[in-house]
Length: 239
Image (cartoon, rainbow, N blue to C red; front, top):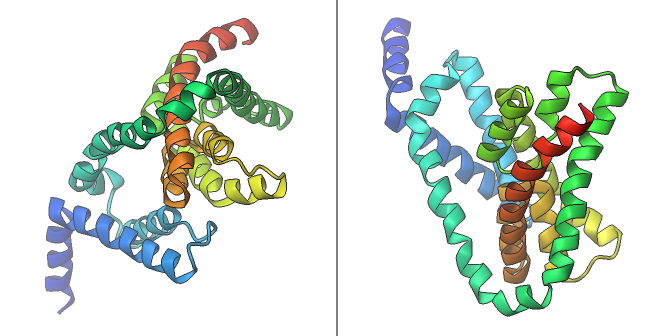
């Protein structure tokens, strides 16, 4: 009885449809819990989905590469989803124009703080140079962060994990921190979340408020450009 079940699982685990279905079901389960919790930021559907998928892959002994081969369609959709962020941004274009100077100052401050704080803590803990390079671009969207990390001599795979963790933590705790320090302007809240926690934080901001989502998407894009251009230059000066 066990042998046929094992054979069925081997077949399903190698099927692209199985990986795609697993991804969609895991996220739907995470979102169901998120809704049941009253959309509490700590019950993040992405975190729940990641935990469910990772647990199943670990228990079943399925290599991540096998899973990713089937889940590539979802990965492909990240591109169109990112481009679609231009729509809420277009609707808030006048607010963006009026806030141009504040946006520039916030971008530089936020981008530098994200990199310097992470590297500073890691240096205090005597982390290796390779680890520091992997940490530095953690607040940028994954494809850009991995490219910057590789250019600095870091580990792109480690950077990818750190980027996901940063996004989840930012989406979960960012709104709470902003409430505690009294930031009420949706433009400022959205921009802060976008700079600190890229796409995952932006998706959370869009759920809460359209203005916050628009400014978060803008921050995510600008931070990616700023980090890709400035971080390698700063890194060569100090390391």
